[in-house]
Image (tube, rainbow, N blue to C red; front, side, top):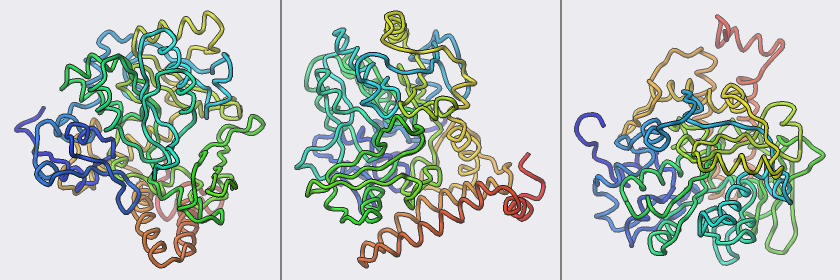
Length: 461
C-alpha cells in the first residue's frame, strides 16, 4: 500500500467508471442491492450513508479500487511455491490444452467442457458442498442470468456455456456466510479477485470458499447487447426469455459464434455473429467501462483458470477446446488423475502457447492499458501493474481510442434510439462505426497501405 489510505466509497467507484458490478460491496451490507442502470450495467444501491461513505472495507475489497491489493500480491500469497511465474500468465503449476473425454461435458459446454467438469469433480469427491456459478434466470426473474449455488451435478450442468451478460455475487456470498459448508466459486478474473480480497478480510469466507475456478476474459458486456440482437432479429427486447451466445455446431469452427434467442411465445431466432452489428467482439460494443482498466486476462488469482484455445488446429474444431492453467496443487492432482483415467484428454503446453491463444487480450490489457492510463482523468485513478505510457504507434493509439469510444457511445446511441422508438438509428450508427473500425484495425492491401501512411508513417514495427 502506498502513502495514506485512499478514500474509496461505492459512489466513488461508480462515479469513476470502475464498478464492474460484482456485488462484493453490496454483499457486506444487508440493505444494499445490485440493480441494472439505464445502460444495462449492474451497480450498487443502498442507504445514502453507506453508498457515499468512504470505508476501508470497500477500499480493500473492490477489485478495481486503487487501494486494493493487486493480482501479483494476491497470487504470491495464494501460490507462493508456484513452479512457474510469468508476467502475463501469472503463477501456475502446469498448463494444458485439450478437452473433457468423459460423458457429454464437452458437448454441453461452449468450449472443451473443463469448467463444468472441474466443478462436478469437486462435488463428486466431496471436496465442496456447493458451487456458486452462473445459470439462466428463473422465468420470474427480469435478468436472463444470475449466480446460484448448485449442490449436485445435475443442477451444476444447467450452468454450462458462456454468459456475456451482467451478473453479480451479493446473494450467493450472503448465502455462503449464512450456510456452513465448503464452496467453490466460478467467475471471471475480476470476480475471482473480489472473492480473494473478501477472503483476506473475512476468516469465515476464507474457511468456507475452498476453491476458485477462473474464466479467461476479454471484457464484459451490458444487457443492451441482447436487446440489440433482438432488434436485429426482428423481436422486441422485452420478449427475449433466453439466449445462447454460442450455439454449438461440431461441423463449424469454434470461433464461428451463433447467437440463438428464445422468445416469450416459444419461437426462436438465430444469427451468426459476423452478420450482427456488434459481431466483432474486440471492437468493444457495450463493454463495461471498468474493463478499460483491467490487466488480468487469465484469472491470475484463481486456483484453476480456463479459456478457449484460439490457435489452430483447435480454433477450427467446433467441438471446443480448453486452455487450462492450474495453480493450486490439490487441483493439479485432480487434473492429473483425470488424465490418468482417460476422462480428460489434455496435453501439456508452455506459457508461450497460452500467451498466443490470448494474444489480442494481452495486447489490449498491456499496451492498450498503458495508453489508456496515460490519458485517464478519473476521480479515482486506478493503480495497475502497467505503467502509464504514450509510447505507442499512432495507428495503435487510434485503435485503442476508438475501442473506448465505441464502448461508451454504443450505450449512448442505443439510449437515444430506444427513447425515440427508432432501432434503426442505433443499427445504422453501429454498422458504420464497425466499418470504420475494421478499416483502421484490419486493413491490408492498398487500403491498409493508405491507412498506415496516414496514421503510422513509420510502420507498425
